[in-house]
Length: 149
Image (tube, rainbow, N blue to C red):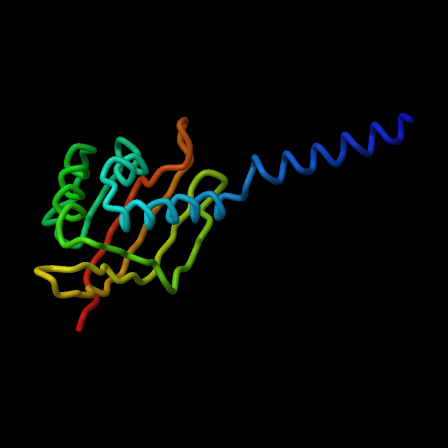
């Protein structure tokens, strides 16, 4: 009987530890998946909620480094609430785990939309730094630039 309890406890511990303590890369990629989904849904509240309050942000249309959450919201209100439907899938991504609480993800993406009834695609390069904060994993830095010709 004690052996059965020990085996059950070990299985329970293994199941809980594998689901509640995912590796930093997995956590960061979950944030990026949520970002991609929020972008495609034009969900400004959800996408802004993925950023840390002190995040540094440089979108394709940014003329300077954005350092305030309110300015990130303004950027996405302009970007996501026009030219719908939209999407920005990230491909050819590379992940570098910087530590237990920080991950760098860089890759290529294409911002797609429909402007005046005509579809368009804007290929670019994107970099995210995603870090563990008190309220979970958050984007602490994002930079996107258009693909050079």
